[in-house]
Length: 207
Image (cartoon, rainbow, N blue to C red):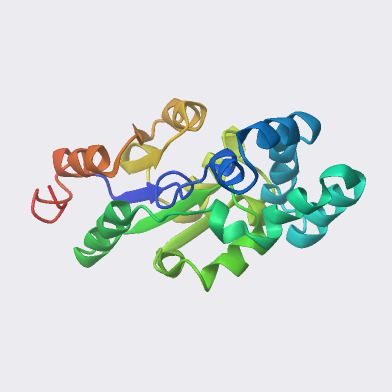
């Protein structure tokens, strides 16, 4: 039986999310290592993903770490560069699925405010049939509650949801609820899985 709906993570599935690589380019690897050792930027971002204000949270952390304030503010000021480049092959798969009438959802750890700001810069964010954004929901992956909330809202049985995410912990949590899962490594691998599930032909998947 084919999946009834396909769910995409966003970071590292539809667009790259590698902040360390951004800072390596901008300030150099040595300073980036020193920055990340001095300031827990990922913890800061988790606050945003859980619903914290976007600019205010980041600028607040910058104020608490004056020695690194300009670099911390880059997380907000140059956020779209952190979330780049787009993974065009995955975006094409999203569009191919929707073109065939397959419902496509997002399930992402993403701040509600940063998500709204990203809409004008990442056009594919407006193309999901349903959006499940952690900052709006008040819970982040891999907490089992977020998957339960998706199930309750969409009404699709867990065994008929197919979910792609780059993180093993997020995939494992979904699989424990009975979801079909795919750990994303490349758009080609994801395309092959969609073909194997009977959702796309090889031509439609760009293979």
